Length: 162
Image (cartoon, rainbow, N blue to C red; front, top):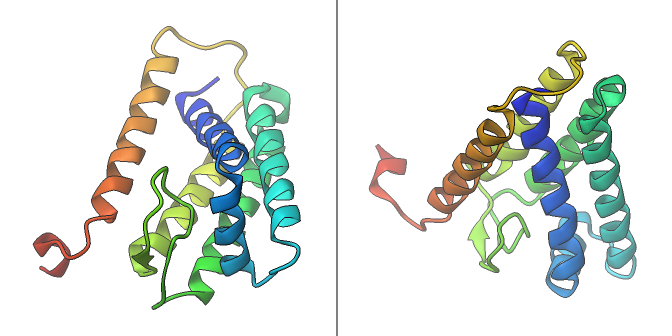
C-alpha cells in the first residue's frame, strides 16, 4: 500500500465521518451545492457511502484502481458543484469548522487536485502490505492538507494578492 492511497483513504473516511457527525450542517451545504433542497439529506448519504466505499477500495491492492476512479469521480463532482457557486460566499462543508467563505479558484481547485491524486493512485502498481513509514507519511500528508485548508480560510491574506 502506498502512502498516497492511505492518505486518500483517510481523507475519504474522514469526510464520510464528518458527514455523519455534522449531518445538519452538511445537509445545508449539500443543498446549496447541489440545488436539491428536499433531497439534500439523500445526496449527503449517497456521497458518504461512496466515500466510504472508495476509501475501502483504496486499501485493497486489487481494488485500488477502481477506488481511485470512484474517489476521482466524487472529487470532480464536488469541484464542478463548487464551480457553479463561484463568486458566492457559502459554507461549502469542506472544513471541520463551519464558516462562510468565498468560493474562489483555490477552493475549487482543491477537490480537482485531490481527483488528480486519486487518478494517480489508481495507476500505481498493486503492492501487498506496506512499509513501516507508510502510515507516518500518510498522516503527514493529511496534516499538510488540513494545514493548507486552514491557510485557504484566511479571509484577505497579503500573500494571496501578491
